[in-house]
Image (cartoon, rainbow, N blue to C red; front, side, top):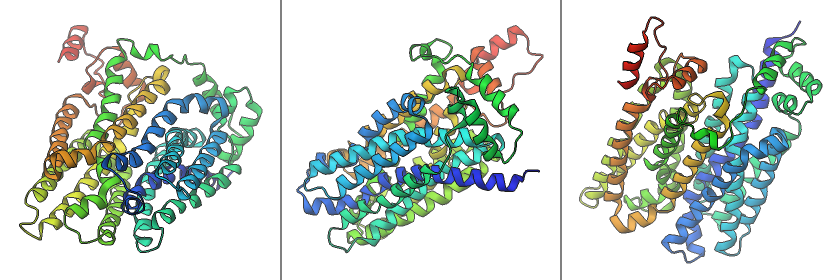
Length: 474
């Protein structure tokens, strides 16, 4: 007799270790927000060079994301995770001991490659080792780990504020989770799905029996074998007319997640708080620590309530909150210096923005792109959506400081607020509600040519052909 509890503890342990890749993702994207304040004291940095230091990680992540699917199939999920941990270690060491700004850029590029590959392979590995009834919760551990990593980076930034060579210590702390990931992955099993794909079925069965703590895994093996028979589309086929609308939706969600300004907050929060009137780097970074905490708490809320409240309500409410928060931030900077309390308004608006993003776009992109694409194009189409996210992340992060210099903080945040308003209108008319609808039903609706907003709706069986046509047009 097998023990479900023992089996679940083992799967939880495997998933938590793999999710350390997400923690590194969050840590290495967040740590630069504080480190940048001190790097500029050691090196003469222009605005463009500051933007390059931040966006070099994203440049690497774009290429990592593009190659991740091919690498995961070639090397296997577990081995690729070991490669990812090695890239994190190498990049962190280069950046920590850098003697010039160009060496920092080189190290951050390595870290970006690790982030791009890890953002794809970590949730994929977790999904493939998890039992179906726990898959959603376990995969969401990766997103939660990202927010925890961001929070930890802010705490580290504050802890090393008054230490000589502070930015080097800030980077160096990233070695600890990277080493932990590499050691942990040595002891974890390979993905049973990948092993079966390599015709190593006997080995896959042994791993599944251990993961499920049961000898009876024949049905799951058969399901995996059946799913692997599905035809996988090549890159050209994802642009077929019937797929194009959902591909557009996925790419737009990646675009919206970034151009609404989230990473201007994540990467430049201490800089924003200094502009808002906080007296020194230490107080600005301390205020940023609070952002990390509310980001984690709001993500936990989303994980628990996505399936209860639905995707669309959380997404639309979050976008409204983000829009008003950015407009409030713009107002605070417009009247800066006229009232000392305005800096607290700036901080309050920033916190509200983070909360609204975390329970909406923060989790929605990754969830919806895993739901809206038909099986035969899912891997390739998800790659396009993830690349869109990283591309626009790079575009926004590499232009933010230039926008601040050109337009000033008030007009810059007003611009992001207007983009949020556009995003709300787009999501209201185009984003479907996919709660409680099977992936097969979504795919059937896509094949029938239903509007994007309707692809998550179960279609009444009695609907006639003429009514169905009218439904499509409406």
